[in-house]
Length: 223
Ligand code: SF4
Image 1 (tube, rainbow, N blue to C red):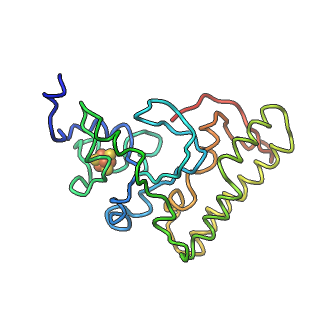
Image 2 (image 1 turned 180 degrees about the vertical axis):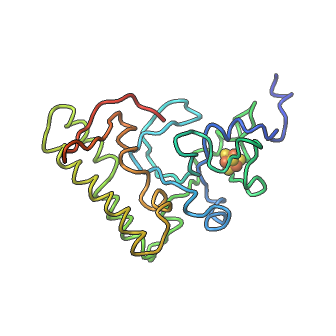
Image 3 (image 1 turned 135 degrees about the vertical axis):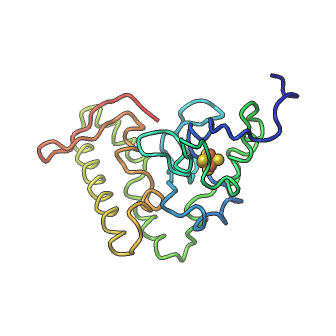
Protein backbone atom coordinates (compact mmCIF):
# COMPACT_ATOMS: atom_id res chain seq x y z
CA UNK A 1 0.00 0.00 0.00
CA UNK A 2 1.39 3.39 -0.91
CA UNK A 3 1.17 6.47 1.30
CA UNK A 4 -1.43 7.80 -1.13
CA UNK A 5 -3.65 4.80 -0.45
CA UNK A 6 -3.34 5.16 3.30
CA UNK A 7 -6.77 5.58 4.91
CA UNK A 8 -7.09 9.08 6.34
CA UNK A 9 -8.99 7.85 9.35
CA UNK A 10 -8.63 5.19 12.02
CA UNK A 11 -10.18 1.82 10.99
CA UNK A 12 -10.79 0.96 14.66
CA UNK A 13 -9.12 -2.43 14.21
CA UNK A 14 -7.66 -2.31 17.74
CA UNK A 15 -4.15 -3.42 16.73
CA UNK A 16 -2.41 -0.37 18.23
CA UNK A 17 -4.58 -0.61 21.39
CA UNK A 18 -3.47 -4.22 21.91
CA UNK A 19 0.18 -3.07 21.96
CA UNK A 20 -0.26 -0.63 24.85
CA UNK A 21 -1.85 2.59 26.06
CA UNK A 22 -0.74 6.06 24.98
CA UNK A 23 1.38 8.61 26.82
CA UNK A 24 -0.58 11.77 27.61
CA UNK A 25 0.16 15.24 26.25
CA UNK A 26 -0.84 18.74 27.36
CA UNK A 27 -4.02 18.68 25.31
CA UNK A 28 -5.13 15.53 27.19
CA UNK A 29 -5.05 17.26 30.59
CA UNK A 30 -8.82 17.99 30.61
CA UNK A 31 -9.47 14.22 30.36
CA UNK A 32 -7.65 13.51 33.63
CA UNK A 33 -10.07 13.21 36.52
CA UNK A 34 -12.93 12.75 34.03
CA UNK A 35 -12.82 9.85 31.57
CA UNK A 36 -9.27 9.20 32.79
CA UNK A 37 -9.29 8.92 36.60
CA UNK A 38 -5.93 8.56 38.39
CA UNK A 39 -6.62 4.84 38.80
CA UNK A 40 -6.39 4.36 35.02
CA UNK A 41 -2.97 6.02 34.78
CA UNK A 42 0.62 5.19 35.56
CA UNK A 43 3.73 7.31 35.75
CA UNK A 44 7.00 6.25 34.15
CA UNK A 45 9.76 8.13 35.93
CA UNK A 46 13.03 9.59 34.69
CA UNK A 47 15.64 6.84 34.34
CA UNK A 48 13.19 3.96 33.83
CA UNK A 49 13.97 1.70 30.89
CA UNK A 50 11.07 1.88 28.43
CA UNK A 51 10.30 0.90 24.87
CA UNK A 52 10.47 3.96 22.60
CA UNK A 53 7.98 2.96 19.91
CA UNK A 54 9.13 5.22 17.04
CA UNK A 55 12.78 4.31 17.75
CA UNK A 56 11.85 0.64 18.23
CA UNK A 57 14.30 0.19 21.09
CA UNK A 58 14.49 0.27 24.86
CA UNK A 59 15.97 3.48 26.25
CA UNK A 60 16.17 5.24 29.65
CA UNK A 61 13.51 7.93 29.99
CA UNK A 62 14.88 11.46 30.07
CA UNK A 63 11.51 13.01 30.93
CA UNK A 64 8.71 11.68 33.07
CA UNK A 65 5.61 10.51 31.22
CA UNK A 66 2.06 9.61 32.21
CA UNK A 67 0.47 6.70 30.40
CA UNK A 68 -2.84 4.88 30.41
CA UNK A 69 -2.20 1.64 32.26
CA UNK A 70 -2.12 -1.74 30.58
CA UNK A 71 -4.26 -4.78 31.34
CA UNK A 72 -2.49 -6.53 34.27
CA UNK A 73 0.06 -9.02 32.97
CA UNK A 74 -0.50 -8.02 29.32
CA UNK A 75 0.43 -5.23 26.95
CA UNK A 76 -3.07 -4.10 25.83
CA UNK A 77 -4.36 -0.70 26.90
CA UNK A 78 -6.66 -1.09 29.93
CA UNK A 79 -9.40 0.83 28.07
CA UNK A 80 -9.45 -1.63 25.18
CA UNK A 81 -12.22 -4.22 25.27
CA UNK A 82 -10.73 -7.30 23.64
CA UNK A 83 -14.11 -8.92 22.89
CA UNK A 84 -15.70 -6.02 21.06
CA UNK A 85 -12.31 -4.64 19.85
CA UNK A 86 -13.49 -1.24 21.06
CA UNK A 87 -12.07 1.64 23.08
CA UNK A 88 -14.10 2.57 26.16
CA UNK A 89 -13.50 6.28 25.54
CA UNK A 90 -13.12 6.36 21.75
CA UNK A 91 -14.86 9.73 21.32
CA UNK A 92 -12.50 11.21 23.95
CA UNK A 93 -9.37 9.20 23.11
CA UNK A 94 -6.05 10.91 23.86
CA UNK A 95 -3.96 12.75 21.26
CA UNK A 96 -1.56 9.87 20.47
CA UNK A 97 -4.50 7.56 19.73
CA UNK A 98 -6.00 10.14 17.37
CA UNK A 99 -2.72 10.69 15.53
CA UNK A 100 -1.70 7.05 14.99
CA UNK A 101 -2.92 5.44 11.79
CA UNK A 102 -1.99 1.79 11.23
CA UNK A 103 -0.26 2.21 7.90
CA UNK A 104 1.36 5.54 8.58
CA UNK A 105 2.91 6.56 11.89
CA UNK A 106 4.34 9.88 10.66
CA UNK A 107 1.75 11.97 12.51
CA UNK A 108 2.43 10.12 15.75
CA UNK A 109 6.20 10.47 15.32
CA UNK A 110 5.83 14.23 14.81
CA UNK A 111 4.15 14.72 18.20
CA UNK A 112 5.40 11.70 20.18
CA UNK A 113 7.93 13.43 22.46
CA UNK A 114 6.38 16.90 22.51
CA UNK A 115 4.35 18.53 25.31
CA UNK A 116 4.11 15.39 27.36
CA UNK A 117 2.21 15.61 30.62
CA UNK A 118 3.96 14.86 33.92
CA UNK A 119 2.68 14.70 37.51
CA UNK A 120 3.78 18.27 38.17
CA UNK A 121 1.36 19.47 35.44
CA UNK A 122 -1.51 17.68 37.13
CA UNK A 123 -0.49 18.21 40.79
CA UNK A 124 0.66 21.82 41.07
CA UNK A 125 3.29 22.97 43.62
CA UNK A 126 0.80 23.67 46.38
CA UNK A 127 -0.97 20.31 46.00
CA UNK A 128 -0.75 18.46 49.35
CA UNK A 129 0.46 15.26 47.64
CA UNK A 130 3.36 16.92 45.77
CA UNK A 131 5.65 16.82 48.81
CA UNK A 132 5.15 13.06 49.12
CA UNK A 133 5.78 12.60 45.40
CA UNK A 134 9.02 14.59 45.51
CA UNK A 135 10.32 12.87 48.63
CA UNK A 136 9.56 9.46 47.11
CA UNK A 137 11.35 10.48 43.89
CA UNK A 138 14.45 11.56 45.84
CA UNK A 139 14.63 8.35 47.84
CA UNK A 140 13.52 5.84 45.22
CA UNK A 141 14.70 7.26 41.91
CA UNK A 142 15.14 4.76 39.04
CA UNK A 143 18.59 6.24 38.34
CA UNK A 144 19.65 5.56 41.92
CA UNK A 145 18.25 2.01 41.70
CA UNK A 146 20.10 1.42 38.42
CA UNK A 147 23.37 2.56 39.97
CA UNK A 148 22.82 0.40 43.09
CA UNK A 149 21.81 -2.59 40.95
CA UNK A 150 25.06 -2.31 39.00
CA UNK A 151 26.99 -2.43 42.29
CA UNK A 152 24.93 -5.43 43.44
CA UNK A 153 25.91 -7.39 40.33
CA UNK A 154 29.54 -6.72 41.32
CA UNK A 155 28.88 -8.31 44.73
CA UNK A 156 28.40 -5.13 46.80
CA UNK A 157 26.38 -6.18 49.89
CA UNK A 158 25.89 -2.57 51.10
CA UNK A 159 24.19 -1.70 47.79
CA UNK A 160 21.88 -4.72 48.16
CA UNK A 161 20.98 -3.65 51.69
CA UNK A 162 20.22 -0.15 50.44
CA UNK A 163 17.90 -1.54 47.73
CA UNK A 164 16.14 -3.57 50.45
CA UNK A 165 15.56 -0.37 52.48
CA UNK A 166 14.29 1.48 49.41
CA UNK A 167 11.87 -1.36 48.56
CA UNK A 168 10.56 -1.40 52.14
CA UNK A 169 10.06 2.41 52.18
CA UNK A 170 8.26 2.30 48.82
CA UNK A 171 5.98 -0.57 49.90
CA UNK A 172 5.11 1.21 53.16
CA UNK A 173 4.28 4.45 51.35
CA UNK A 174 2.01 2.63 48.90
CA UNK A 175 0.18 1.10 51.87
CA UNK A 176 0.06 4.27 53.97
CA UNK A 177 -0.95 6.96 51.43
CA UNK A 178 -4.34 5.37 50.56
CA UNK A 179 -4.98 4.82 54.26
CA UNK A 180 -4.28 8.46 55.17
CA UNK A 181 -5.77 10.18 52.11
CA UNK A 182 -8.69 7.96 51.14
CA UNK A 183 -7.24 7.59 47.63
CA UNK A 184 -7.64 4.22 45.98
CA UNK A 185 -4.55 1.94 46.14
CA UNK A 186 -4.97 1.80 42.35
CA UNK A 187 -4.03 5.50 42.17
CA UNK A 188 -0.52 4.76 43.49
CA UNK A 189 0.91 3.84 40.07
CA UNK A 190 0.09 7.37 39.00
CA UNK A 191 1.17 9.07 42.21
CA UNK A 192 4.36 7.09 42.97
CA UNK A 193 5.05 5.48 39.63
CA UNK A 194 5.28 1.82 38.80
CA UNK A 195 6.05 -0.58 41.66
CA UNK A 196 9.80 -0.82 42.17
CA UNK A 197 9.96 -4.53 41.37
CA UNK A 198 8.81 -3.59 37.85
CA UNK A 199 11.39 -0.79 37.66
CA UNK A 200 14.10 -3.29 38.66
CA UNK A 201 12.70 -5.85 36.19
CA UNK A 202 13.22 -3.23 33.49
CA UNK A 203 16.94 -3.25 34.25
CA UNK A 204 17.07 -7.03 34.32
CA UNK A 205 16.76 -7.80 38.04
CA UNK A 206 14.10 -9.85 39.81
CA UNK A 207 13.36 -9.08 43.46
CA UNK A 208 12.75 -12.02 45.81
CA UNK A 209 12.27 -12.11 49.55
CA UNK A 210 13.79 -15.29 50.95
CA UNK A 211 13.94 -16.03 54.69
CA UNK A 212 13.77 -12.35 55.65
CA UNK A 213 16.46 -11.35 53.11
CA UNK A 214 16.11 -9.36 49.89
CA UNK A 215 17.58 -11.31 46.99
CA UNK A 216 18.08 -9.93 43.48
CA UNK A 217 18.43 -12.29 40.56
CA UNK A 218 19.31 -11.54 36.97
CA UNK A 219 16.40 -12.09 34.60
CA UNK A 220 15.60 -11.38 30.96
CA UNK A 221 14.19 -7.88 30.44
CA UNK A 222 10.46 -7.89 29.53
CA UNK A 223 8.27 -4.92 28.56
S1 SF4 B 1 -7.23 4.93 24.90
FE1 SF4 B 1 -8.61 3.82 23.52
S2 SF4 B 1 -7.82 4.24 21.44
FE2 SF4 B 1 -6.18 4.74 22.90
S3 SF4 B 1 -4.92 2.84 23.08
FE3 SF4 B 1 -6.46 2.82 24.74
S4 SF4 B 1 -8.18 1.63 23.90
FE4 SF4 B 1 -6.91 2.30 22.15
